[in-house]
Amino acid sequence: MIHFDWLWMFFLLPLPIVFRWLLPPVAREKEAALSIPFMDDFKSYSASQQTKSGTLMLTLASLAWIILIIAAARPQWLGDVVEIPISGRDLMLAVDLSGSMEVKDFTINGRTVDRLTATKHVAKDFIERRVGDRIGLILFGRNAYLQTPLTFDRETVNTLLSESVIGLAGKETAIGDAIGLAIKRLQTQSESSRVLILLTDGANTAGEISPLKAAELAAQYNLRIYTIGIGADEMVIRSLFGSRKVNPSADLDEKTLTEIATKTGGKYFRARNVNELDKIYHLLDKLEPVEKETQSFRPVKALYFWPLGIAFGIAGLMGLIRILTRGAL
Image (cartoon, rainbow, N blue to C red; front, side):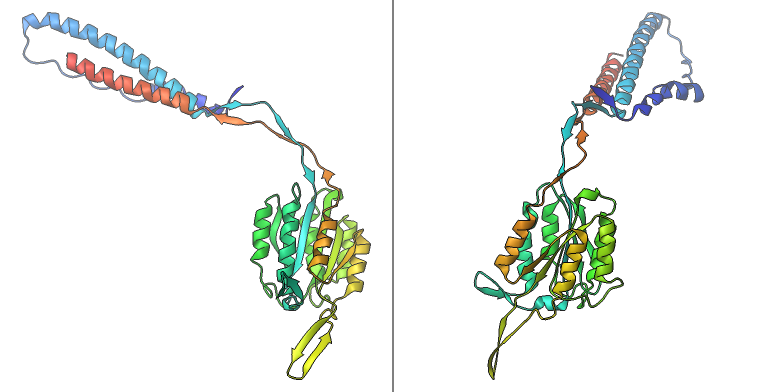
């Protein structure tokens, strides 16, 4: 069906009549002082021709104005209604950027990398697989920041995650604040689809709210939190005095992370290497999608250029007639 998006433009149709009524008439030219008797026949012929030409021009101008108003009203062709079923979750990723994430205890393709690089490497594939989910990104250190609001644009989320750097949000770790920010961004979404995946390698050392208090609040808003503790259990340190083994994850507060997941109906995972981290993300892929309200739209095709082209064509014809009429006279 044809639809006019700016229907009010039709109120402008009588505008030329209004202007004609309001503006003073054009003064007539004075008759010539010299009168030639045999020119009377030519005058009557010329007046007749001018009357016909004037009527034609007025008709064409009126038609052009009407068609121009039709074009200005933005005619559109509306297609049949198309329904789009949307399924998926509102999934927020919270990634730790504290100073401890620069510890190089992960290996990718035989190359030792820091924890954040390993996280980016695995999370990239995870984000790309979440077709149908709206994904948001929170980066936290001493403070928590919303880097990407919930969006279907997975490429943008991946880009902003890959551009994040250690210490961007501070050197300390505010787990509670990250959870609080996720609650704020997800509380208006469907209760059955709120998911937070929180990845950290340490304990809460900053922030305005404690992690467990934030977890209780998250449970009230039906936000499920899946926590991932990242970091190797053993790493060899070489020095001038020889080699020694240390635990680079000694500061990881697994107890609190487990309690956060338990309180909210989620689960705690431990990632000691890239393979374990990848397996965790594959397990998270098995979250059942939740059907949301079906959205619909009608395809719209603009038609204004057709009447606009006709109006320009009539204007061109009027110009041609005026030129020919003057030439004939």
